[in-house]
Amino acid sequence: MLWPMPDLPPTLVVPPPGLPPKRPVLAAATQWALHHSVITVARAARLTPVIWGARRQVVVQRNVSYVAGARTWAHRLDIHRPRQGGPWPVVLYVHGGGFGLLSKDTHWHIATALASLGFWVANINYRLAPKHPYPAALQDSAQALAWVVDHAAKSGGDLSRLVLAGESAGANLVTALA
Image (cartoon, rainbow, N blue to C red; front, side, top):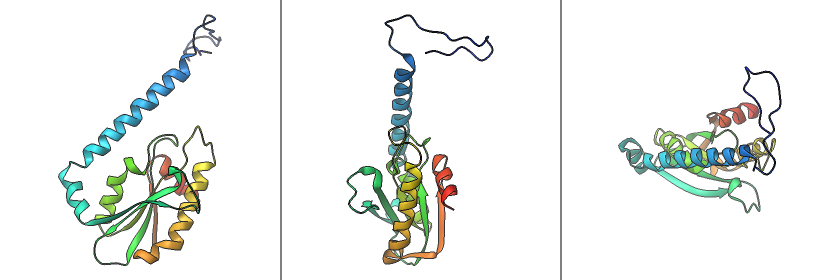
């Protein structure tokens, strides 16, 4: 079904029989283009001098499972922490992307920048919509927070200084956790 423009009288426009629906194709193409453009930007960030310098100051432990027995990429996090010092304030960082796009791998540069400033950062993945509708992302974020509370101190995190951070959908999720 196609819907008319808002300024037109409320009528339903039905395409001729036999034509494939446009919305799913358009939505898939838009999602693919957005996802790949963000990945391109994330890869380009590796080349910027600021991030490159920060990367040398940070230790990264990748793809740690925050759900016991999980076999999916969605239940993984990366730990970014300074090479020296500690204990460090702890940040649970949740990526944005409209609940349906992106990952910890597209937002690694934010976690690296925070770690270079002296934070212990857990940069998480969560299950994405529409395959995993609400409340999947919120449940995953809560499980990641519980994991961080149980494990951060073992690798230099100071849980008395815990920050929940994110942007866009991630900010929505950490607000719900707070």
